[in-house]
Amino acid sequence: SAKKLKTLDLLSAEQISSAQAERLWARLGDSYIRRFSPTEMAWQAKHIIPCLDDPNPLVVATRNFPERGGTGVIVYAADRPNLFATIARQLDQLRLDIVDARILTMADGFALDTFIVLRADGKIINDDLQRSAICDAIQKALGASQLQPKPSARRQDRQTNAFRFPAVIDFKPGRTPATRRLILTTSDQPGLIATVAIILANHYVSILAARINTYGERVQDQFTITLPNLDDAATDELLATLHTELAAALDPGADQPAAPITMDQQF
Image (tube, rainbow, N blue to C red; front, side, top):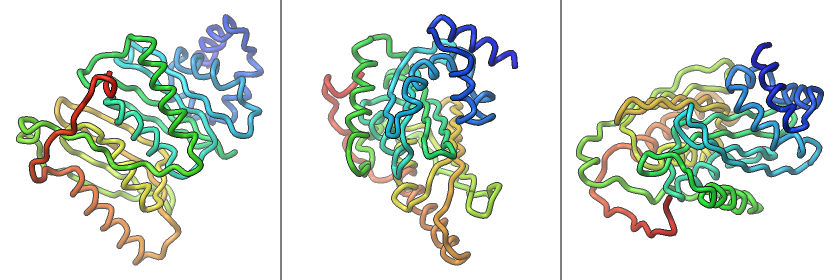
């Protein structure tokens, strides 16, 4: 395809052959080519290809993408429970807002999670040291033997809380009996993706894909999720529990003081 040819042209400058690139793309699947630009694909390949034969890789890299309006973050690693939730929580802990997240889980047991993030003030991260700190923080978090991310501690200020509206949470059938589409419409708020990911992970629900759309102060996030192997009654009970917990976490509640932010905690 034209997209592949453009990507291969970019990779030639990195001394990466077409055979190496095609091997990576075969593992990632056809949907990967549709979801990323040649610039993104070349950047990702540059970092992932040297680790393709590593049985336990951990690739974390960042780069600015002005054309996408933010800073890109990629994580390539062996898939395991709470992987996406841990990364999202770590980005939230750094006071970064996730404006796009894409999850690719490969048949051979590896995962590629990609993000576009912004600083809390809505700006791109231009400082090399700050981008390096993102990589260090994610690598440290994923170095744990078990991934158990904690809920977000970030809070909105009272003025912003006054304009929030109730979350609309809808579960729709997926392509298979074990999958569902979670469609979440709510006010934009700090730590949103991390909060959702942690609640799902706590109930052994895996995220296969995520799409984030922001419309001013309102967001509509769509997640493709895989449910545990349960009978119909237990599945209905699980979905009801998820609905209750998501609504409680995302809807306005009692006023709570904002968590203190120190200069070394934010970008």
